[in-house]
Image (cartoon, rainbow, N blue to C red; front, side, top):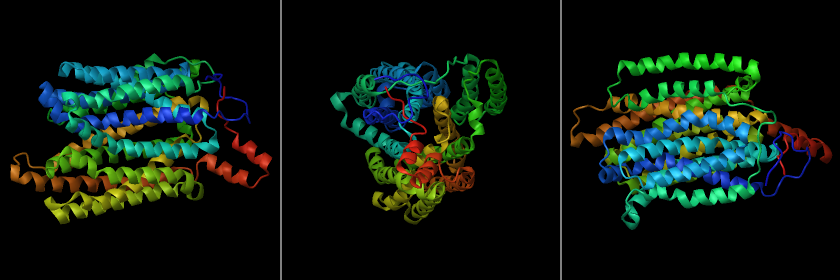
Length: 511
C-alpha cells in the first residue's frame, strides 16, 4: 500500500479504509516505546543482582536510552520527510526489535548499556513517524478522534510500564528474571513490521530535501551538553563543569539557529524548520509541552521513590496503585478532543491544568494526614483527579500543536514535539535532585526514611503544582480552537457540498 510522495492526494478522494489498521500498528509501536521508557525502572534491583552492575552502569541503562532517544528525534523526523515515513517507521521498528533482543540476551552490564543506547536511537527513528503518518494519512476532520486515541495510549503507557515490569520480573518466566521486560518486544515488533509493510501508506515531503548533517551534529551536541550533566550531576556532586556545559549549550543552540537560517536560504533543507515557530499554535504549544514535561519528570520519579522506598511497598503493589491513574488518563484523553475541544477549545487544556493541580493538592494533604499508614485505595482519589487533568491536556495539546503545521513539515514538527517533551522530562528529573533529595538529610537513619521521603514527596508535588500554574498561563497563547474544529463549525453552516469541500481541505494521502 503506497501513495505518491506529495502533499497532495487529490482533494475529495475517498480515504483509504485501511488507514485504521495503519493507526493501530503505529499506536502499538508508540505504546511499546512509552512502556519501554519506564519498564526498566521497576526491574533495576533484579538487574543489579543478576549482572553485578555498578550504580553508574545502572544509571546509564536508564539514561542511555533517554539520551539517544532525545538526541535523535529531530533527525528521525526529518529523515522521514526525506526518505518516506513508512520506510523510516519500518527501519525504526526493525532496529528497535533487534536492540530489544540484544538487551534481553545481554551477557554483561556493558552490553546492556550499549544495547539500550541502540534501542533509544532506533526509537528516535520510529516514534516521530507515528504522528507524521497520522498527520499525512487522516483528513483534518478525523484527526480529533485520532489524537484522542493517541492521548489514551500515552496515558496507558505512562503507568503500564512499571506495572508490566513488576509482573514480568515477579513471575520470573523460565528463570529469566528481568530479561522478559525486553524480550516481550520481539513478537510485538515482528507483528508491527509485517503488518506495517501491508497497511501503512507511504508519504514524504512534496519537495526534494537533503539531510542537514551540520544541524544534526549541533542538535546532538547541544542536547548532550544539557542531558549528560543532568543525568550524572547528583552522582558526581554537581561539579562546575556540569553547569558550564549546560550554560554552553545555549551557545550551541544559538549557533544552530544561525546555521539553520543560512541553510534555509542556501537550499531550503534545514534540519529544524524555523518557519514552524512562526505558526503561533506550534510555538505556544511547544512552550506548554516543555513545561508539562517538567511536571511529568518530577512526578513519576518521586512517586515511585515515595511508594517503594518511603512506604516500603513492593514493585507490584506500587504498579497496581497506579492503575486508577492510567484509566482516568485514558478516559479523559479519549473524550476530550472528540467532545470537549470542539465546544470549549483551549479552555479544555486550561481546565486540565487546574484539575491536575487540584489532584496534586489532595495528594499532598493525604500524604501528610495518613503518613506511613496511607493505603493504596486512599491514593485512588488524587490519582484519578490527576489522571483526568492529564488526559484533558495530552490529547488536545498534540492536536493544538500540529493543527496548523504544513503537511510537508509534519515529520520535523513531530520530532520537535517529542524532543521538547523529552527535554522537559530531563529538566524535571534534574530538578528532583533539588526538590526531592535536597530536602532529605544525608545522615538519614533507617527509621527516618519513611517520614523523610514523605516530606520530600510533598515538597516535590508543591513544585509540580507551581509549574502547572505556569502552564495554565502559557495556554492563553494557544489558539482558542484548533483549525480543524473551526473549519468544522464553518462547514456545519454550509450546504452539504460546501461542507465536504471544507472537510477535504487537508485530504488524506491515498494510494
